[in-house]
Image (cartoon, rainbow, N blue to C red):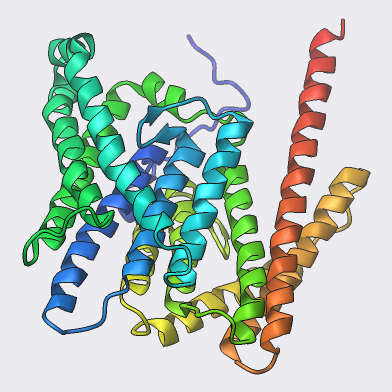
Length: 407
């Protein structure tokens, strides 16, 4: 008779069900969902703007799409022209592209025509190159057909996405202007195809989990560390740009600023359960909250001013609460010097988050110039935090290697 192990529970608890059940979407699925939703919403808002229902920010659309392209390349190594190794150089290149998207969205028309050309290259050039590659790669198409199941629809679906990307890129790049509501229709069709591709790829990754592991590599930066890098650079750029904005030397779009902040928040929430209030298991409510952040952020980038007031309260409140809660729960100081520096850095970040949130909730309590300095400092401390986390990873790897060599 089999005896019960002393550490094994006598009664096994049932796995969570319903809204408490975990939702393990792949990172690629999440990014495709965000990109597809952004394009569908862009098509809808463009139609509304054409009828005069509300204004439409073309600079916000360009910045948003460039930023999403950069996030996909930074986190997955998947560029518009195909997958590539996530080397340090590649991360640096796409971080520069992300920075262009941030500036193009927040400072209207200041970089034109660079954002137009970049979008045309990513959509039309990338879509055309990927379509040619798919047509020439008979082995890949034969494999998908032979394996069947969720792989079978990949060929027509990928071909549709690549083909639709070409006219979208030409339209966004200013090469031609489709008649009437043509651009809005093209954006919506491409967005719908991306959402369908997200669903199919999720089914593929559930059937072939090894394929998902191969895509979601943590080298040279994990997803969480990549998002710290993106957020840090965003904050530094925002802080620097606010100085000439406050002095009246540059135009500024607070709608795009809030929208891009919410997009970062949405990706972290949906992909890892990382929220401003802490990290939570990825359940349906958590993923739904992330999707809501994405939709609000997209709309804010596309339609200026409409959502600024409620989003200021949302983002400001989350920053204050997200900074205060860890300080209230703070435990004793760690013993290791590196861990102590890490704890102090996180305390500083929490204080800066509270100050940033208060400056949003109570305009005028902190001057615009000081707010810019605080934001730049916040970004710099975030980048320093990333440096400490990388050091901690190296220390752990060294200790594990030493333990493995011990007799």
